Length: 385
Ligand code: HEM
Image: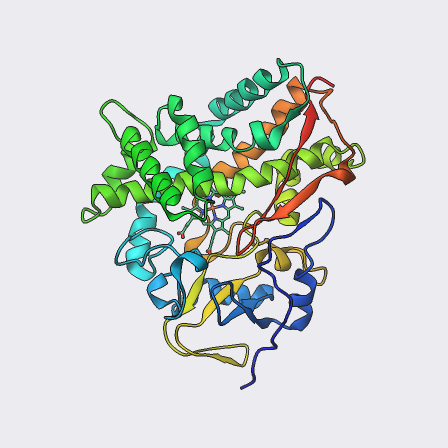
């Protein structure tokens, strides 16, 4: 049994870098070994998995769990960005094992490729309407400020049945989640509760109502609101930054690969290179666990370096880890890809002259810090050329 090598580089730092500049920590982590120890943002060690095969083992490991009840006792949940425990808040992202499986069974049929494809036209129409409105201003528009948050929230709210006049409230709630002021985060969570209640109100017919009829009967109304919050927030948090990179790559004249591949491949490749979830969510060992010859005591935090593995030059080509793997595989994977694809299609069909208003190399991305991904700081575009 050996110790995992300890790296001093901080993979959780919030930094600004150019759009094409690789993340400074990823190669260092990878070079250090398949399982590496770093300093966690909330203190103490975190074990980071940098190897594809080992990552897939961790994604399905029965004793490496999501429930924050197993987080190190010294961790401040707010600094660590932890959700409530599974006992306090049962959800896809806090439960494990059979209880998680039951909740997955309630969600899964609602988000299949077939179910999602029923929304293709509406998703495309939302993209066209929002981009046309921006183009009609005749100005240079910043798509990161005025499109990439609004579009995925419009889609996920529409699919769930949240009335579309509440999109501004949804945008404000998502932005409130980034606040360091607990009162603002509390207000954002209350707003998510209102959005969920609106989707479940009499006469609504979105997937929220279907989900209510499918969840195990012990799930209370408040817990159902939290499940809907998870879908709305996860639906924005990831697709929003991805849209920035996707659009930047689509606009880049030198990126002829965008023309050469199918839109599906282009979307997938953008997500591989710029994974909006660069790390998995937090996991913890529920007992002592041995991984690749390293012993992890109970309550050890474990992360999978999705971005590092996806971009490992030594990795043999196979399915990437953009949407995770195993029982917690992303619920919204089909919806997200449909949304991203729709935007590229609308751009090509309706705005063939659209171009970046600044050179590609001037675009910057900010690593938001912790386990969050990076996002373009701005994307100035002339939609009608
Ligand atoms: C490009 C966009 C997206 C990416 C890259 C992404 C990525 C991921 C990843 C990596 C996980 C697994 C995390 C882990 O196991 O630790 C996950 C889980 C999840 N995602 Fe996504 N996601 C995206 C979009 C969405 C959308 C649009 C929704 C909502 C409809 C969504 C809802 C969820 C939910 C509810 C889970 C938890 C599933 C579970 O734990 O059983 N995601 N996502």
